[in-house]
Amino acid sequence: MSTAAAPENTEFVDFWNEVLVPKFVKYKHVLVDGLSHHSEKILPSLNIRQGDKVVDVGCGFGDTAILFAQRVGPSGSVLAIDCCDSFLQFGREDAKAAGVDEIIEFVEADVQGYPFPGDRDFCFSRFGTQFFENPVAGLRSMRASLRPGGEMVMIVWRTIGDNPWLGLPKQIVLQFLPEPGEDARTCGPGPFSMANQEMVTKQLEISGYTNIEFERIDAPLVVGRTPDDAVGFQLALGPAGEVYREAGEEAQGKHDEIEQALKAELSKYETEEGIVMQSSSWKISARNPE
Ligand SMILES: C[S@@+](CC[C@H](N)C(=O)[O-])C[C@H]1O[C@@H](n2cnc3c(N)ncnc32)[C@H](O)[C@@H]1O
Image 1: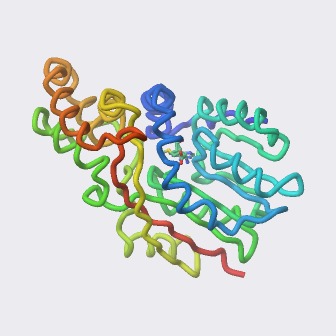
Image 2: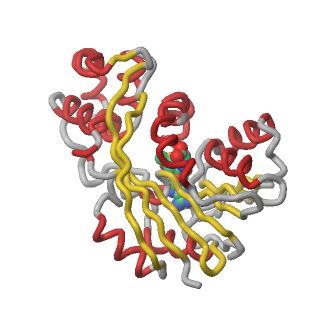
């Protein structure tokens, strides 16, 4: 079952649906499979048990929600929520193929202010909370989804300097194009908006959480099957993609030289697995008070 999107979508939710969805779909193999080493470092350690009620916030294509459904089994349930129904369609089909569609409910909605049931044992978000227009409103909603004592875990990127898979391509594109202006259309505060430990701790405290803990997770990512695939991914998404998109005709005019420079750099990271680059994120856990 899916709930219709609120008619008054925020500018960021519109941006996800209008601009990012087709690019995410094209590079689903990078965004889902490319995270496999990262997932191995985080997902097995989550306190999710058989029978648990889980919520996956900003679930995207639904791969983590499906994994949680397999873990909680038929006596548990997973509520997978995202503001883009096009992503959820993949989740619904994959959940059916995995035989867990009865355990997961995919809901299209903006998490900020969503009326969660308040009965969840575990609330998870991988790279979803960084895009909230109002992080405290979103984090409060997530806490409201939890039973007293329930646990929230969110994964967010650390700084761009700690994430060469995004920082390096941006530096290269900036050799040819200007920084995006203040009025650039975006999908929200952005991938590094929760990198600052002190600020996020404050946001979580204001949102009513206790037992706040940060764990640094460094993991390699496969950012493309080949150098050309990695170049296409970088020009479509992330900080390099934003510079390229915002430069419009100027970017198109310089496309060949940008592509060549990016390919020369990204080829240095070619392995048998594909183009492999380093990433760094926070695993942040917190609790709804008893
Ligand atoms: C970078 S993607 C991460 C997707 C998935 N969790 C993963 O790890 O692959 C961020 C996701 O958050 C969703 N999102 C962003 N803002 C949201 C909001 N306010 N409410 C619900 N979903 C949101 C986007 O549609 C997108 O699917």
